[in-house]
Image (cartoon, rainbow, N blue to C red):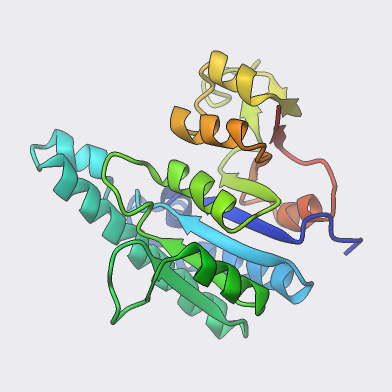
Length: 238
């Protein structure tokens, strides 16, 4: 690997990404593959924080539409992110790297409580840190939580691993002529409503000068390439 461009990063993964080709739950092969890339980065000196969604198990907004109280539904969604985080922690530890789960909800028997200083301390000691349970508040997505955590841990780059290789001007699955952006500003992404992340997350990154790289999680080696400064996917930055 060439010189590392980013010393500390935050990687945002959707819960759906962990499903692989399944329709629910976690694909062990995907879990192992993603953990392997994270371990590889950590072994090369990169400090890695993660935020993982819970949509492969429960999605709070969807549960609320079925009639469950929105606050309670979002709390269920937060617990789903903890389940995914514990699964990822287990796989990372099995591959030989220390990993801590810090939860925005108080779950002392399963993981530590989240604080920014605690997360930064673990990162500085070489541990991978998974920040679970979103922001701990209902009505906020894990996209917004990822943006917030990236800022709190002083990450140099926020990465979003997806099933496509960047940001397009329309859905590439529906439009074969969709154009992929190599680079786009937050201002333009917001104005064009490209759906990269929710509006709150995008504005938070824009207002605090946090660059974001969107890339294909399932293309082997892409994560390491980005960390070493190679262009891959779409860079979002004003």
